Image 1: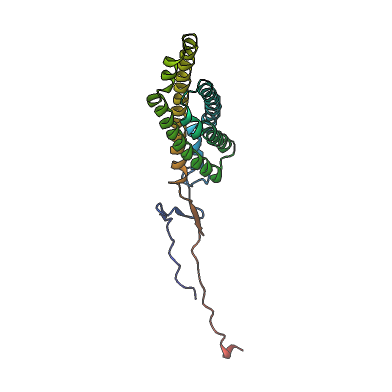
Image 2: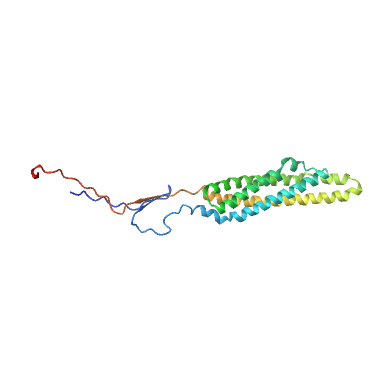
Length: 226
């Protein structure tokens, strides 16, 4: 005696939990089965390798211009104590170099761990860039000591003093521009990284057998037949 056939279970999908159930033998379209790395590949749309290389270049430019700015201000006793003691050209450059290196590594080997590390470092770099913008803007707008030193210096020194003062203001403006570019790049990479790591869900596939499960009942042996 054969028990009643178990009804076929149709494929069920749970989009909120990321669980997809497919029945073996069922025709599945090529794009209906989620790919594990498809979500991570969305990060590559942000061109992290190119932006990472630009980050490294900006970091080196900030380091060079920052050192020039500090040297000019120390030579002429200009009031660059804010830039000198904040150390922005040093720690800002270090953070931007790390972010750029991780961005390049994340494109060469796109893994969830690298994308997450790239996201964290770019968030930190964007915050550091904002801090640099505040420091340099405050230096350009508030620090009037260079002009005061040039006006009170002897006539034979006033010309060179004014030239160095103009150079100092120009270099500070370059650092300001580089910091703004770094903020834009770090913010864009953070957005692409967050779209991958913050909103991605791991898909779980469950395959059911194509044939229904059948059960059979075994009749006890008849003693009269023995």
